[in-house]
Image (cartoon, rainbow, N blue to C red; front, side, top):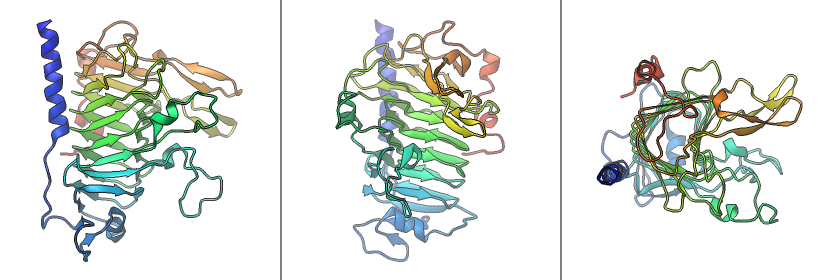
Length: 372
């Protein structure tokens, strides 16, 4: 009993450390500021979009934008390299939007009936290299819970309800996020390109809320499973990697904590499932056979909501159009020295050897990129 209390105390301390953060102050070392409460100037802008528009198209060195505390209802795309967005505080500098996959797109040139789709639903989309986010929140505020609570056959239920907060799209590479919060429900974080590092951050959601084919490292971060609109079995899934078979690394979690809302039951949430995206090929449209997902959890603490089996299957479309199941043992899912009531070691939760685990470091995962 004592050891159990100690474990929960450790988690509480870590959670407070990850979430508290510290305020950032504007100064002369910023190239631009965003503060709607002060007078606009050559370097101060009323919106984040205005500051991004004013940034050089090609930056050889970091272009640092300080964002004052406030709620910024903006849907943003960063397509210029070396942009750094630094919030005043991650709990009070908030970028949010409420788009969802099945919603009519409002992008310039979008035709009637053209929807956002999952990639386009993101509050913030990254399409350039060397982007950094610090001390801010990125959130998709689509009301997933209200929609999820409706019966499947309810005419009011919205289909295609995926709603992304942050999307690392084609062109993204060497992306760094530190002391940020990513908030959503289904598909919160779409890591679909390049190398990325999420450090000392908080990521929350429920259905496949960290997913994609990118090479992403998560360190000293809290991964929180949120409640559902109505009971579901399984309750949620943390990750859904679609890593290409030729990629050595996918979604890697080191020294993280996996927590939950009080409403999330014990033994209800698999660590993840293998996503084979439906893709157009020369001979038809079907689940990508080369998307052999990779996800690894190392030295992480897991609460009791994580299922004893650890991993789950995921459906897809075969070449002949039939529905098939992709099994977790066919993917690259591994663990090493995890702790907590949700951790387990057995044949369905494959463990790395000490030698294999030694290959999961920043240097090996990122290669010639050495972020500080």
